[in-house]
Amino acid sequence: MNKEFVRRAFREPPLKDTAMTSALHYLDLTELSRRLHAREISPVEATTVELTRIERLDGQLKSFAHMMAESALVQARAAEAEIMRGEIRGPLHGVPIAVKDLCWTQGVPTAAGMTIYKDFHPTEDATVVRKLYAAGAVILGKLQLTEGAWAEHHPQIPAPVNPWNAAHWSGASSSGSGVATAAGLCYGSLGSDTGGSIRFPCAANGVTGIKPTWGRVSRYGVFELAATLDHIGPMARSAADCGAMLGVIAGSDSNDPTALLDPVPNYLAGMSRGLHGLRIGVDHAWNTDRVDQTMVDAVTAALQTVRGLGAEIREVKFPDVSQIITDWFPLCSVQTAVAHEATYPARKSEYGPSLSSFIDLSSGFSGLDYQKIILRRLSFRGRVASLFQDIDLLLVPAQSLASPTTAQLANLGDNAEMLNALAGCGKSRFIDPGSGV
Figure 1 (cartoon, rainbow, N blue to C red):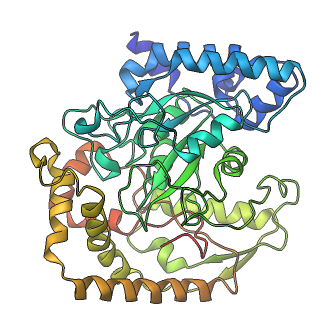
Figure 2: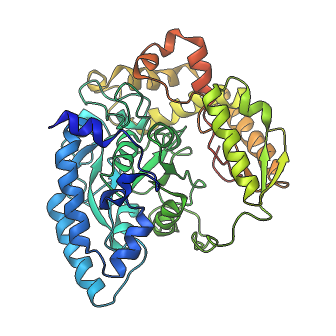
Figure 3: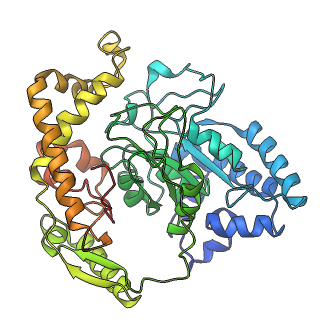
């Protein structure tokens, strides 16, 4: 691989006003969709461009865990034939995307970032994968992630590389999804979020993501980290792109009784309405305390933008999060132990030290301890819901530290300031009252 080419290719981010956006691989998903359905570009052409780019660049970026090139071309040809007949299935029809490698794909390895599952071939598709296929999407392959969707990559599996600067974090746990989407290796991807795993890689790689309300998207056929905390959501290069993807994967599912029965709205319907009348809450203390200046500046700029677009800004005080952040770790650990019960501790030697230590944390908590956490969680959710009686959105940093390096993260346990910064960043850019906190 030509390293100089990679360095030049990723010198500038893929934004609309850069010279590189004339390249097909950096089109927004919704713009590609428009061109595909207008027959200006063929699905086969778009898919071939992506497969060629992946082959050229991903040896260094390491975002894909498994390629599905042959089946992707079959799907692209089928989509092309349907589009030529005027049979448009929706906004993802013919669009090349990729999915996090914890979503089952029939007959295709699904390892969930773990060595013990490297030979696992599901006998059926996850519901989200089935819905993508039904929408006519072209699935390029499976994207790498941290071990079991926890915080660190397995020691034997190379971590995806941040395409803007290899010295910086690529995020966790949907690292491959963030890298591939940012690098123009797919037009959108699926990630999962249990405590920041869509939000962190989106912030790290400069893309957009949605952590949907818990149950909005079926979890059937998706490897668990913590059942009551896991959310499946889209990652793409714009809010509209994410809305188009969420509209496809959301909805009820007979295989997942926890999936919401509410109708799925048209997430793109309000695109032309603007922000007039939208009530956005801002807690200035929360947006500045232990937040580095780069992130403060970014939030300030975002605030000025949304105010200029007509949003109503309301000062609020968000409920104290210190206890709920402390509680998240044992809550998630106990649920992770349940998810790994079949293989841990029986195959503990095959686990990486980070995930292994996290599962072991669960043994230190009693049923009484766990129940107290559940009650505090319910109380916190109630306080958040009350706050949202007066606002529609809450504007906060995606993370408190703008762009940590891998070297900084390696010393996380010995650096109280870093630990506090990242512990406080379990916040989405816009928090909604049903987000499953």
